[in-house]
Image (cartoon, rainbow over the protein chains, first blue to last red):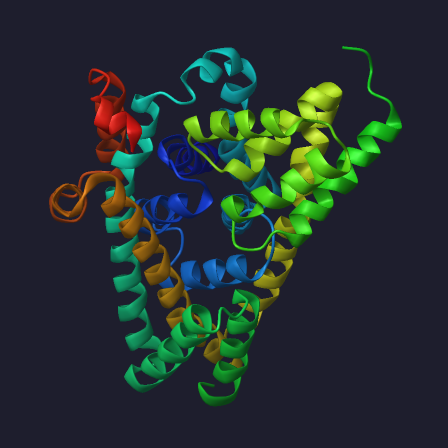
Length: 176
Length: 190
């Protein structure tokens, strides 16, 4: 049942993903590319690139787009609900309880302990994008684009939307 | 709670539409915008309340940029407020994503369109490397080199070599963090 699988694919990353939207990205990749094989690493990279170029939260944009791609409007709805509703319901329902524990060292420890695992998964994803780039764009273009993007993003703090746009233009001109 | 008036719902809608359209860089980067609208412009919450709600939001998993609007919308105007605030933040760009990527995949066979798709992969790689570094640095500061490395390596081995679903690894860690007796004073102060 595709809706049930979609629900699980977005519910699980969002219910274990501490640290906001970005922490959820590698967990979603593990589901939609790794477990269910709904999309290729290339398609996931394209979704992520556009997601980073547009405003608003990344987790819901990816859920909506991937859900739609797999099962139409119903799929988008299921994926977005699985992303938003569980933690929002907890927040509305257990506010008093959570208020008491908001500075608890245990709660702090939860996000601290998850971070190295997420960092590991992000490193793995970086690696898989590298090998995808080598296969697709080739070594020379991957190095050139990667180096230019790194300088623009890290050194000049260029807006991600402009970096993605520049890459699109470069690809349209030189990789066609 | 009395039925919310149209003016309040309209104000919620526009406030969170602005936040959604101006907030680049994912949820955590949007928090200052939420504060600007909710505390400074509309005074729906005080500074202290906002800080408390942010702290509470962070005790829960999932995207922060939907928990905050949902909660604030609910507080200001009940269930309709909650729905309007969340939809205003997320819906416009979900539609934009679907339209743009739909158009893109329809012409995937055209050479230069495929070239565009290939060219963004190295960019995403750099962005992901940046996130990796960011999470690694935070982890190193909180847990130290040795512990961070050991946890990352163990998790990596279980997920990528043994083939365990990441949900089990992260879930087990969360359970351990929650159930283990409260930490030392030193741990609490970090």
